[in-house]
Length: 288
Image (tube, rainbow, N blue to C red; front, top):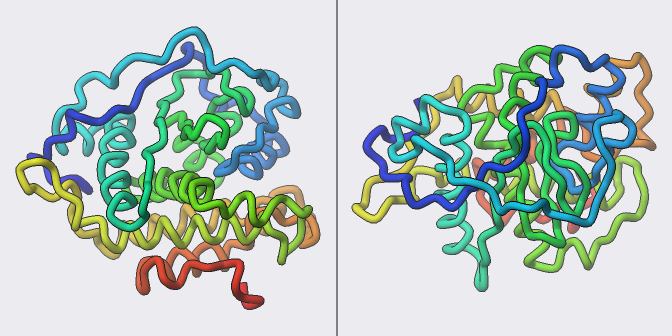
């Protein structure tokens, strides 16, 4: 249990969009899963490599529908869709308190797949942030892929870590970090790796403060994480490390890294959790 059962989460603005489709976890080979996880947590669409769709400039014909049966923290504890929608309230509140001029992103719960300005959103691509839309896309069936293919627990808090990571990319966009440090290729010291590690740190900082955000009546949205929940969140960070992903194919090439190693991702998350946002400048150090 992560949310306080009586917390009011009914005013979330998340929307569901897409069409029903088969879960990718059962039928995608390990090579395609690696492509999916390499693209996960970014705005880069690699669905063309999976045959799952092609990039497009449309955001679809509908802005989506509301997330049903998502009124309380208890609903969030029992349903993945509601959990993600409810967490957006706490994330927006956290960043509004910590970033002047914060503008909340749109949050779309993907049902199967849906077109975006950054390409097709689906569980085959993984969660991502689309900068031109200032929007986060997440198909909750992605959590099943993490469990089935990589042995991750993908529990409640690890799911929120994944969402918080995408919100970290939104903050980088708002702060001009993406513009100041554009893509300069791959490798262990690349801007892409630094961008991902900073987003992990931002996610950890939010988890460290997650009991401070409250609903309109003063009820904290979330309970303090347990040691097991923190372990699960760190595990989620580790399974999407470049080295771990590449090990599935039997060859690790650091010069192709785009997200950082499992150790780095876990460490930067832990740094944010322990020390807060002030220690999250991944662009100011050579000690990644």
